[in-house]
Image 1 (tube, rainbow, N blue to C red):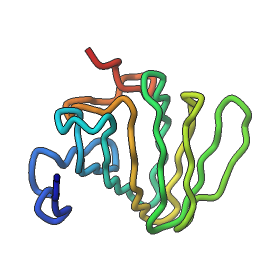
Image 2 (cartoon, one colour):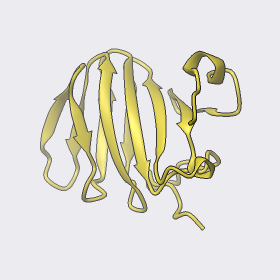
Image 3 (cartoon, rainbow, N blue to C red):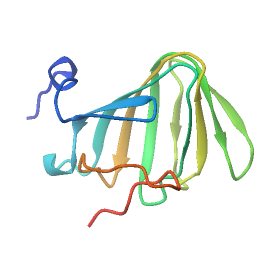
Image 4 (cartoon, rainbow, N blue to C red):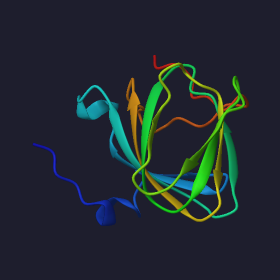
Length: 127
C-alpha cells in the first residue's frame, strides 16, 4: 500500500513547476502502478498549449474555472469543479485558467518526475 500526503510532498522534488503551473507528483513510474497521478495547480490568467503525443492523460477539475480548446476541431469546453476531460487521441489543446485551477491528473504511461515540456507542448516518450 502506498500512502502519501499532498502537504508533505508539495515542498519536495515531487513538486515540479514551470510556466505558471505547479504539479505535485503523488505517484510516479517507479511506484509501479502503470500510471502517474498528479495534483496540478495552474495560475489564474494563464494559458498553456500542450500536446501529450506520447501519453494519454485524464484530468478532473477540483477547483477553479477555465476552458480547454481542442486545436484540431476548435471546440472549446468549460472547465469547472466536477468536469473531467480525457485526451484519448493525444489531443493538442490549449488550457486556459480564468481562476486558479486545481486539477487531479493521471498519465499513461506514467511520468518519471524528470520530464519537462518540449517546445511542442509534449513530454518525451519514456525510455
